[in-house]
Length: 284
Length: 260
Ligand SMILES: Nc1ncnc2c1ncn2[C@@H]1O[C@H](COP(=O)(O)OP(=O)(O)O)[C@@H](O)[C@H]1O
Ligand SMILES: [Mg+2]
Image: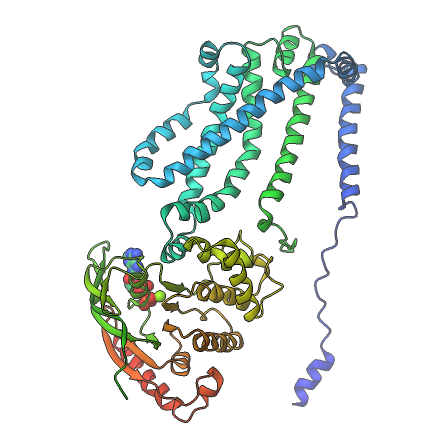
């Protein structure tokens, strides 16, 4: 008895591991400041390197030139026209590709027989680098809007299809069983279990497919087009006008970035039950 | 006392599942009766086929052989007429509490307005008003299982199939939910078949206990439980409680020793 009491008295208090302190910059403003600092630093370094002759402005371009170029093309309206054109192609390709792919993928859930039948064909189509189809697609659909949209669809639909089909197959069997025991028809099970449980997976493909749709649009424009950012980049690079190339690339980057965040907004809106997780993270 | 009316009769149920080498015979001529307004607990070693029996009754699994009679009529299954509740609460994560309760009513094609009224009424009866718009992930395990129970009851099923519904809960919550279940069963005059591995629970709640043998399952014994008290806590202090408890323990023990 006394022994234990002594132990308690003499033992040094165990120090609890200190709570992991957050980095001082780990706030929205702090992070933004660091990010902006990195970007500005990068461009300043680049500009300086070209001015002081460490890099050839002819081969890598020059930030001040890119900026001048951007301002000029904003002023004459061509930047908005080209960006709008590319965005339009990409959005059409994305929307049709996602809808077509998801619908086919979900439809395959209805018939195990058909699904097994077409599975190897889907795998085969998926393994073709779709970009290699671009010349044929332009042959078939012409040099206008249609060929770019078709190319974007060919890239996005297969991703949506495979994802939707896999998610439908993985849908919780117990939830389906429960509904079935209540007397639900196959259609009701589809509507109440399969469709809602594939939705998060399909929305997750939005992120990938926004990028793919832009790839389709831009590559289509590379091959033959009179408009669009891909066209601008292609023409400028064949003229060794690197500043215009960068202006086009940065605009594309901005477009992709904005779309990516748009997906997040859509996600929060369509999947309210996925939120409110309370940001608990294991403190390692 | 007149002999009770039979509501559901399983006769000679046979079921085997194809295995890697040989097929597993799970049910080999299982026969038992469920009376009107019965409360039957089924206990037996795990893996003996209790869930399979429920799946057959609910129409999720087709038996190889055997007859099911419902109030004297031969039926294929009671799909659409049972309230099946499993160990997992199986709440739909993308549906709010209210929408989860509405699930079965929607499936049945009940008029949306009436369904909504019924669902709200049940939720308030079971003390869950105010949680209608919460998503399941925000609720405690006991609350989730309570929602699952409401979802089962709101359909007004002919028979409740409860497959170890409380086994994942702590003892306090379990006693509480047992109480809620007993009240609901008395209020709504339900017939219940309860699978449990908790002998305590079986004795406290049931009118009869069916003991199943090792796989392939057959009925080893049926015990009538005659306690004066039927609230879960009072029943446990009934003088006859421990007698039943030990009888059932002994019956299961022999089997576990054999299998060990
Ligand atoms: N769908 C199935 N396919 C193959 N084997 C199954 C299937 N369902 C159950 N079984 C087997 O049947 C036996 C009984 O299972 P189950 O009815 O779940 O037992 P219990 O509920 O009594 O624990 C187990 O050995 C299990 O592996
Ligand atoms: Mg089981």
